[in-house]
Length: 191
Image 1 (cartoon, helix red, strand yellow):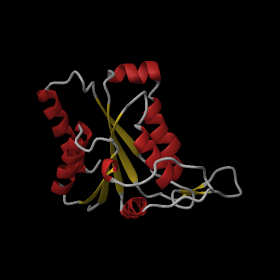
Image 2 (cartoon, helix red, strand yellow):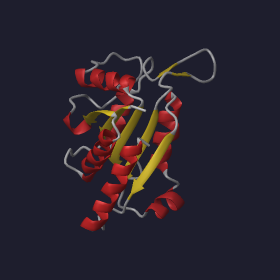
Image 3 (cartoon, one colour):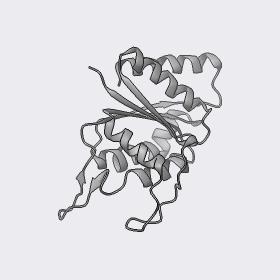
Image 4 (cartoon, one colour):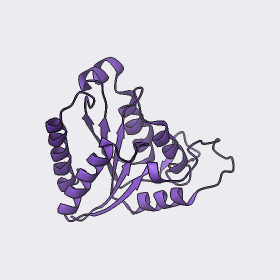
């Protein structure tokens, strides 16, 4: 079944390995006859500092485009590194600004807000320099949990699947090629 897939590269350096992972996913998704759109946060022009909900801020054209792409999508793929246990500040700022009240969720009179982004799934492709087992066992996956539970599921996006890749700094070219092939296969199945 044809899907609208949005790939968001959350690395502040547009030429990172995260970019290569996003391209591998895109290549696979296109091979699977899906439609793909992309956003590279390194190329967008926006203020990542949220002044607070309810405060007047310019809503930049690139953020408007991001919301349009999210509304259009059936499946969203985020590629980003883990820094200090979670995502880069640029990605956090993007989420703060784009996944806003009235777009991603709506406050109600009840204890929980209405989830406005239902009907979408997500794949997180996250790189790190820590061994995966250490990040999971010792740290408890704080970045994965923040994206999965506190952000995406809060807005109605479900399921949220995570692919963790690392350690990057110690990887060989052969290992990176293996990861890229695995990510392309995920793209083909649009998972």
